[in-house]
Amino acid sequence: MQTYNNPLISTETICALATQPGGAIGVIRISGSKAIEIVDSIFSKSILNATANTLHYGEIIDKDQQTIDEVVVSLWRAPHSYTGEDAVEISCHGSAYILEQVLHQLIEAGCQQAKPGEYTNEPISMAKWTYRKPKR
Image (cartoon, rainbow, N blue to C red; front, side, top):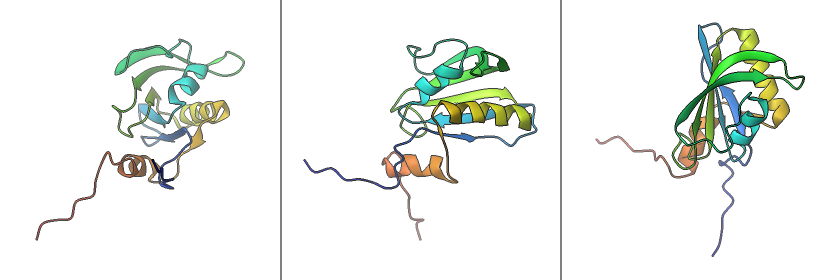
C-alpha cells in the first residue's frame, strides 16, 4: 500500500486563541496527537484517561506549580472532533495577560502556535470536510 505525505496536514500539536482577548471568557484550542498529554502536563487534574466529550474544572499551573487561572477543559478524542484529531479547549478568564500566560505554558509544554487558517485546513486535508462548488 502506498502512502502519501500531505503537506496540508500538520504533524505537530497546535494551539491558538479561539476568541479575542479582553472578553469575560477566553478560549484556547489545542489539536493534535499530543493535545491531551500536553494539556494534562499543565492542568491540576489528570485528563489522560478521561472520557471523550467531557468537561473538567481545575487550574492551569506553571512549572513552579503556581496557579495561572481557574479553567474548564473540554476534551474530544479523535476522530470525533473539529479537526479529526484529539482536541482540547481551555476556557479561562479572557484578559490578554491570562490568555498569553496559558498559551506560553502550552508552547513550553510542546505545542506549536497554529498558523492562520491551520484549524480549518486540517479537517479539509483529512477529508473530514469538502469544498462544494455553488450550483448555477
